[in-house]
Image (cartoon, one colour):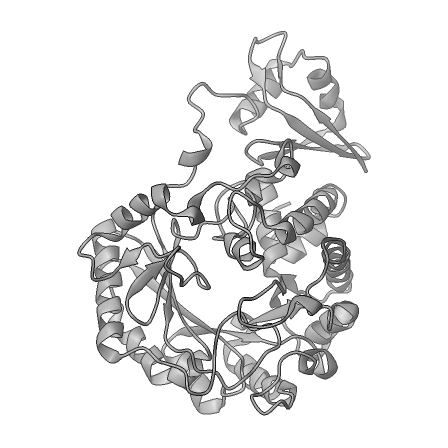
Length: 458
């Protein structure tokens, strides 16, 4: 595939300024990417000559303008692209956990603390009042821990308490799956609570890093309970897989196992990063290893879908949507980190943070007991919390994918001992590998893109 850039220029016919462009060409089809916003446009290759000659015909000019390729005088600045309006809430129920995963990002234990009933009640009331004041149509709630199933009664109670007038409430949990027996599955399903199960591959890959408190592996119990949950939830069941040096070598076999043995249709794959609570640096992948592994993941997914096995990966699906539609659809991967702006975490004391794993005084936005509305608390924190400093490095200068990542995950940056404006090198490595390949697939294999999305858009 041919790939080059065209710097911004004044069109000779219209006198309008055309934005910086990236050009991807395969055969007679061209994909244009507007480097500032991430907007794309598919064109016949014949139209590229008009752009390169700086003399654009009226029909093409209208198309470029409608898709955001012509600079507008009222163009929004970077800081105002996303208004503060939290819509995803995580509630920290417990530090307790029945497992000791080798890359755990929290300080968990069997005798950890759980939230008290009065504080949980106050958090539920706070969410209800916020949603009604802001007239929100949809919000998502995720109780978490530790292992949230250890507080199953609290989860079900929360589900009954959070019911703001005029707002659709979507509930979900992410669990290690060990305690997810038939009774728990039935209760969660009846309460309309979605499930995501952590599974890091087949037995050898999974048990190399996800172990019980006793030190023994957990795979057999997780697989059994996952299959039970799948009978109830079907294609709505999600999974979360963490890739480390332990299981990266098996990534093709893991995806084959997910598609052919577990028959999963929706998975999510994350790369391990450093933690303040576990010595996992030795199993973190280098930037080059991440790039190579991400390519292997995508290639295997393409192969599986071409074989008729419909399986999609959440993060890749988000990034395809970024390219095709250029609109905000994901808290972490559409327009950079939206912690605080779109996402809020409540700890066991009612303190408010912009993301999970940020429960330190430096990141605290406020408290539900501050008698200040949530939007005002966040807007105040935007000016005095380092978490919200825009991230940018020299490598971001001129990067055609910066519109989507804007420096990547703030939590991963902090966990690596850095602070904004330093960037998340994991997200950078993934994006520089993934986006060009996805652009090529959009041009050359639209049927695969449709399959990965689960809907025909091309």
